[in-house]
Image (cartoon, rainbow, N blue to C red; front, side, top):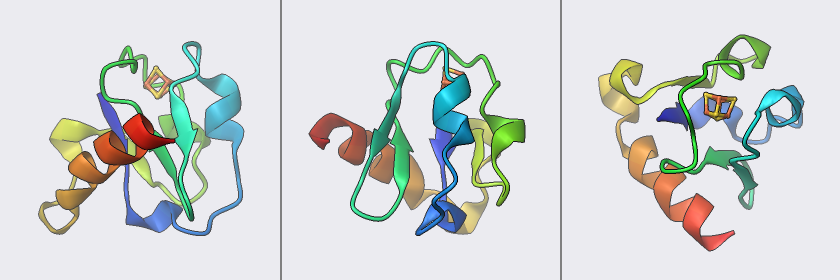
Length: 78
Ligand code: SF4
């Protein structure tokens, strides 16, 4: 699945949500999250992000790995 990382926090740009063919973005308190089981890995959202906050889970930097779980928790809850 694709994952939203820290640089999304307080970004108000939502073109990623508009391009997602399966509507798997969820809005958290201060950032967006991608539902890990609904994402079909199409990659369409990645180039839309102005702050490079979206990437495949295998490409998440070491210091941002916690965001894999944060996306999961946030998309289940919201
Ligand atoms: Fe949606 Fe595709 Fe991005 Fe997954 S990779 S969140 S399916 S646009």
